[in-house]
Length: 341
Image (cartoon, rainbow, N blue to C red; front, side, top):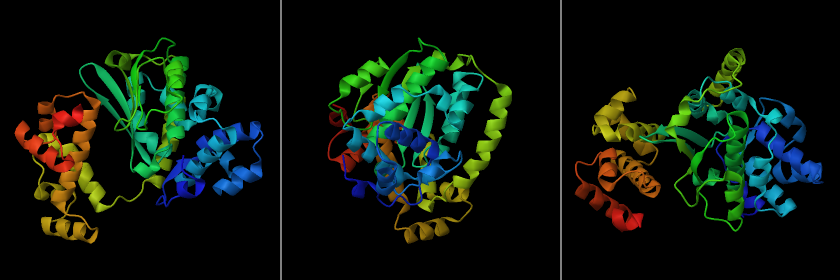
C-alpha cells in the first residue's frame, strides 16, 4: 500500500460523507489507536465526524484507511469491518435504500444518490436478459481504495442478507484491484464466485430478485429522508468540465449511431464552433474524446464477457466488426479476441 503522503494527493474538492470515517475511527479507537495519531495522520478533527451532514476530503478518508491498515496490521481490515457492520449505525442513504418498496426501486434510487456517500465514485444499475448489475465506478483511478471497496461490498451483501432475505443469492462479486493474499476471506464472506482485476467493482444477481418487496418498508420515513438528501445532493454536485459533459453524452449515444459534433453541441446549447473552441481551451479535441469513450467501454465490455464482439461493435457505434477490430488494435496493439483471452 502507498504511503500516507502519496495517498493524500490533490483530490480536486472530492468529498465523502463523514459517517464512513466515523465508523472507521470508532473502530480504531476501540482497538487502542490514539485520537491524536488519527488526527495528525489524516488532518481530520474527529469531533466533527459526529455531525450527520459533515463531509471530509477523499484524500483524508484514504489516509484514514492507510492508518487503519498500518495500525491493525490487517490487510483485510475493510472486509472484516464490513462483515461486522451494525445495522443500527446505518447512514441516511442506507435507511432510504431499505425503505423503498422493492429491491429494484432501491437500486434505482441508490444509483442517483450514491454521490452523497462518495463523490469520487458513481454507481450504475444495469439489467440484461438474466442478471442485474450494481457497478461501482471510480471517476479517477486515484479515487480507488482497495480497503474501502472491500468494506463497501461486504456491507452491501451483509445488510442485504440481514434486512432483505438471508438466502438472497448473489451470482458473483467483482473488484477492480488485483487478487490479494487474503482472497479466501472474500469467499468466506460473500459465498459466491469472486472476480479480481476487473474494470470496476460489481455485484451481480438474478433479475428476478428486483421485484422482491423489502420487508421493513416505512413509506413516510422514505419520503422525509429522500427530501432531505435531495437538498444535500444539489450542494455537492461539482461543476463538470465540458470534456466530461461531452464524454457523458457520447457514452449514452454511441449505440444509437448518431454521435457527431452537431448533435453534441445542440445538447449542450452551443454551436459546433463554440464546442470545438471550448474543448481546445481544456486541451481536448472532439474526435479524441469519442475515441477515449469507445476505448474505455470496449475494454470494460470485453473484460465483463457479457457481450459478443459483434454486440460490442454495435454498442460502440461501429457499422461492422472489422471496423471495431481495426480501431481496437490501434488503441491497444492487439485484437479484441486476443485481448479477451
